[in-house]
Image (cartoon, rainbow, N blue to C red; front, side, top):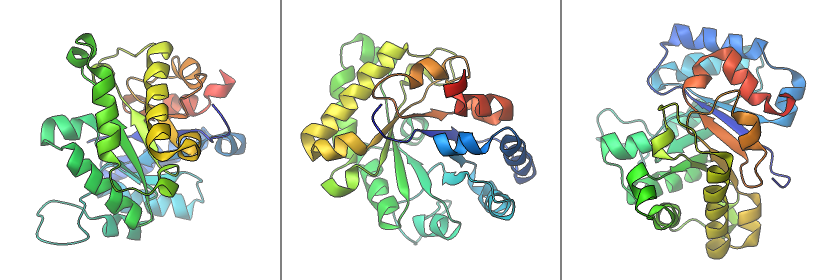
Length: 258
């Protein structure tokens, strides 16, 4: 890893009502030190119904953790029942927005074109996209992983300016390792993260490739985080289940001490 500051993100998915969310944030903050926050950027991504409550706690208690969202629509407003616009998130001081998570692609039919629209909308409203990409076990075993990842990356970034690409985050999540307890080996993860970086470099230039942050996600736990984070092209983690346990998430953030 170059001089890119690691970003550890907690994706809470569809868990925690707003009372539970407040408690989770407060417990997490008790487990982190000033040194932790100086060494690592941290974002948490509660459900939409929790965002205002979590924002209030972060600001009132001066907790240096960034507020993130799990998704958004690409339009600023309109007749899109049940959707949340990027302008709504921006007004809640959201800094990072996940887009293209495999669960959104699999269960809600999101396409690379949809993800690209979201990436551009998030950027337009001055937030940072965490664009997720990843392959299924079947694609990996069929030798299709590389083409699939490259296509997701390039189609997700269509129309994004070269100067902007380096400010983004890409999260590599092998679908076969999400919530299964299986984790890609550090070598597996490094291979794909290096592929993502080289793809960015070929399309958008060396500066973009050198500054873009690439996270790994997929059953990351305190015990696996240190070795994963030691890889040259892994600049952080997008953590699901472990982020719901304050002690575990704190230990992942403190991977450098373990």
